[in-house]
Image (cartoon, rainbow, N blue to C red):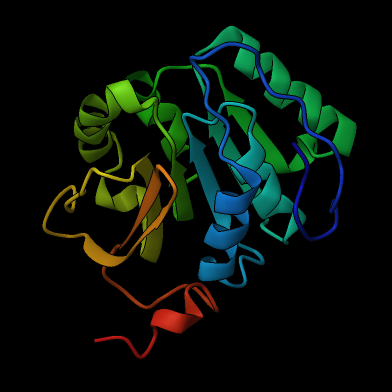
Length: 197
């Protein structure tokens, strides 16, 4: 697994072994970031972070800070190893917590312009409930973007009435739904959606 673009393009990332963590494929990461556009200066949260590949990709493309939330010790060790190898400790926070216990710690680095969420698919329904509770509106910057990865056959609806579905995409068996929180859009994020009704 490698960083796809930006400052650290081509650099290798380590990922935890086993089936509990399912790294986002290079194809999905590349397509997702193409949809998001310029993430420069964004404050990012990478939830169920696994290896941290999504958050690290954002940093490589200019994001200012990423908070990683991941409860599994082998995955946390991989995130920290990846950050050390790239010299990114200064621009990151690693929360070795389950998401339902991370609300207060997450708020310390809020508001976020961009939130990635890639839960184990067997836990997706529970993850949606936790997200709705943990990610209160003051956790998001106005116009923030939330992406949730899920099985392609599953159709996700907004977590609450404050979320707007911007896009739905599938790649093989993987789906991604992109939501937006009301407010002015962060600069250059999802440029292709600015004129979308």
